[in-house]
Length: 58
Figure (cartoon, helix red, strand yellow):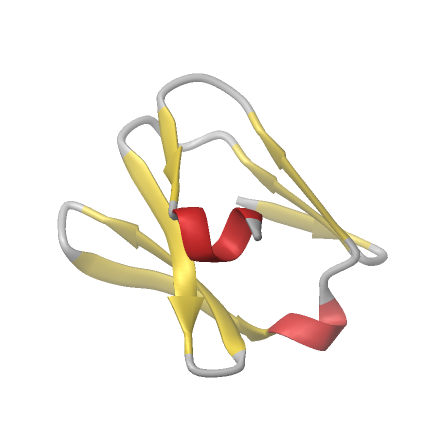
């Protein structure tokens, strides 16, 4: 995962990106890898086999 300005790039296979209260959370193998406040992320870019929760897409 890499964050450039306000864009978060998720390239780790089998990642799950979802909302956790007012934060964006990235889990890999049911372990937290990244958690950032939602207002810090303007764009989410996913490459490969990355799952995104419906609540986050909304």
